[in-house]
Amino acid sequence: MKRIVFAAIFAALATVASAQSLVTVPPGSKMEAWWLRAQFHPMDQEVHGIPVGKIRRNWCKATEYKRELFPKELLVENGTDLMAYSHQSFSLTGSFDRSGAKQVALVGVYQTCGGEKGSFLLIIDEGTRKVRFVDAIPRKTQYAALALAPRNTIALFQCMECDDSGLLRWNPKKKTFAWVQNRRTD
Figure 1 (tube, rainbow, N blue to C red):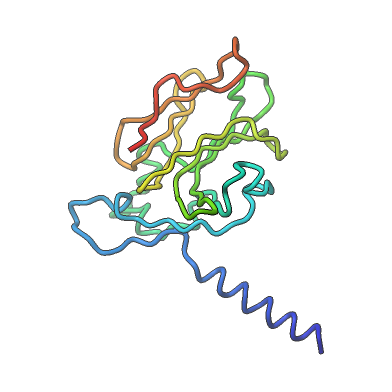
Figure 2: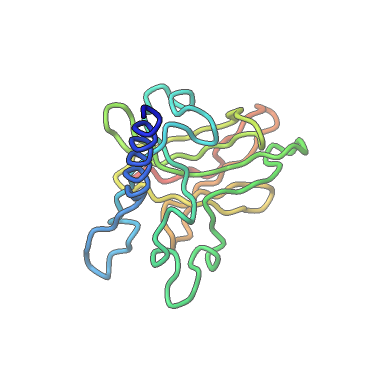
């Protein structure tokens, strides 16, 4: 009997969790891009198996952006995949530190335990939980996407249809990732 009760509770909680959407877009002017109006709702306690509190101590929730978490109509317009058209994605895999080993760069939304939200860029070694780089920006708008730029540089975009990006590249002298063109913080 206890198992049935626990199974029912688990099923109910799973249904509630899946019903919560990562992104909601309130109605607004068609002249204002959806990513400026979008409200992001971090839902997870882990990102790639890493507890969010280990990524940043003051984080309580974070969610990695994935296509399947976004309503299709936000990423496809008139049959055109806007992310593919702009060469953007929510994650990239490559040897960004030029070691030959692969890293995964990904973006998402976080929420601090105090309720502040922002977007983040995280780089981890592929297949591990080793954090190589994290950059988190408290922002009113939390949309973020990535593109691969020349010389194994990661371009971070804060909008879907813009050419303004921050550029992050491995600095071999300092043995760390460093911004070579600052990302926008507004």
